[in-house]
Length: 219
Image (cartoon, rainbow, N blue to C red):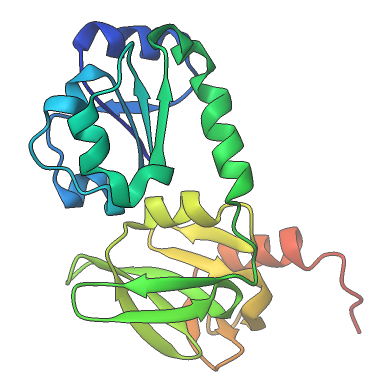
């Protein structure tokens, strides 16, 4: 999940020097930039003309004051706001770790696969693999043999699901190990439970078998 900063350059410098977080400084508060992010900010946010909190996971405001107008403007999303004194920025790593722990995704939890035209609700465990279409320049998820285009890049998806049964087997493929039914070395593919064939190099196929199926009994 990306961490963004909107505010004073000096404060951003202090954050980068002090914290382990990978923080990106932004000047654009559009929906596309903010979607799915942690937003870290200071007094600057109080004068922002347009901000859609529904796109943000959490907003951490480090300020020595609370702006009443801003607070009222955010009444529908108060739970997303986290106010702190400016000097408390040194504890930001802990604040975000605590939020992430409380909202941790389970392998069997449902997620929404979405693009500009459709939203599909599915358990994470039902996704067979994620892939990237170089022609259309879009990522997609394959569920029970059907593919759905996504807004997220494969790198964002990989970070989101890295603690589950998914592995990035090559640049354009993230595979659900639990959905592999067959590894075919002759024709060089893995077949998923729904019959989808994902073509990979022989060396990659061997690594998948060695790293993830070595513990299984072989006849």
